[in-house]
Length: 189
Length: 391
Ligand SMILES: [Zn+2]
Ligand SMILES: [Zn+2]
Image (tube, rainbow over all chains, first blue to last red; front, side, top):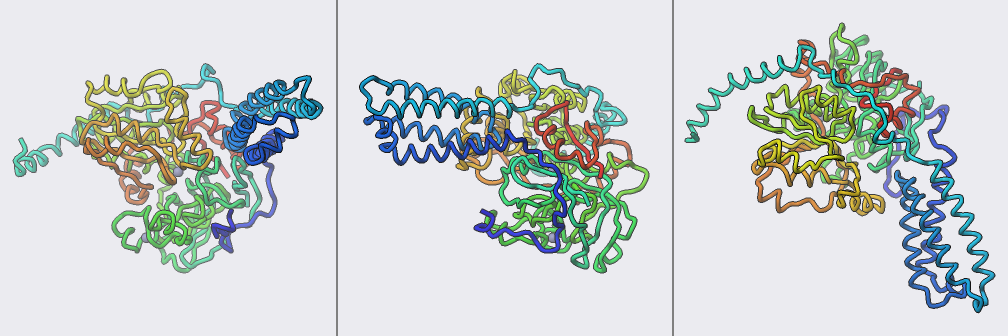
């Protein structure tokens, strides 16, 4: 992207000599991988739904596969964003939907039920990974009812807030006669 | 030297980098004694503002001691001077600088071809703030090269601690400008969205400028308590309706003046569907900013009132109610801060003890702990309001 937009760092600016530790945790990397996987799968489902239904012996459900593709893309984007945790939980929910749809195709007369079983196994594995990563990337924001420090004495006004208010009122009172004159000149009461 | 370096989304590291050097006769090198993390640094941390490159040094609130000056600084600075570095790099000579419009200086953005394309006209170069504004290395580091140093500095006296002076670099004049742009009159109610560091400064500024009533809106108890300490009536938007409470507090007339100290990453709440939609659009890059606060301000502001925007927006905002904005005859004033325009006045107020901006600091840590503090500040952990880093 930087190459397209023609941005380069200016010569002479400081360069990295030795890198410091990264804030990224393994779970963050995994979330990223899952996000890209999700987008890839979603694009495939969106543009080649017949390949999916044929493999699973579930012809006629192409629209559903496309819809699932859109869902995969959206949750993938979310998993790559700052809201990765929400994205991963959305993926866990999506895995449930995938499993339910696959189960509905697991009928006795489906010649491809072996493929469906395999797909179910894969979905199960991915779901476990999604769930684990969602747990591990839980936001560290303190809960709403967490005990917090309050700062009721930090006014920022060393002489007290009343002294500031009084000073401001005095300045306003001094300015007012001038304004009145201007008002008179404009014919404003 | 050590510096906080951007490596990508949510990835800032304390790296060892080469020391800055004089590149131009008008440069000066400053040994940083204190620097701070700004709320707008979080937009970069989240990679919501495009134009950062891995390897860029963060930070635009810095002060320290001059250790080297170029030959072109012309006696305006000398070794040993103690200066605060304004976050806007200014030449002091162009048309805009001469008008005091420092944040839109015409000459200091060394990547002006980018800014010209994106904004129509370039704005000033900024420290540590994307290649759209020059790609200048920032001041969360042990040393900082100050370009155009003959104009880009605020000389500060000895005897006042760093903590009281540091915020002359950004958040104090930013809150102040936001309030000044409201043309506050003694009968005014000023409503301020966001009680982060800039919001806190805007509250104090509105009081200093003689507002009759200041109402501050946020959802974090620690920030609301600090806002109240500064003289504001508070609204917790997670438990109360902002629109209803503002009507109540202004006898149904609405505040005359509204200040946005939130910007493009406004709070997302299921009870406010527009915030969800904005977030979704921002995620798929269909909209760059989340303008819920702007919409709310336009809706509640008293007709004929003024809306002042200090929060940072980067690109495109959807669904702004232009009908209400136009028919109510509102005025909107915006802008990155023209820092040096306000310096003399604000420094005098600090020296005379009228205000002590250090009230906002809740955390002081060594520079090396900076990366973790980005997370603490972002997540509002440990009741964090403002972080100061000591190299
Ligand atoms: Zn800032
Ligand atoms: Zn200029």
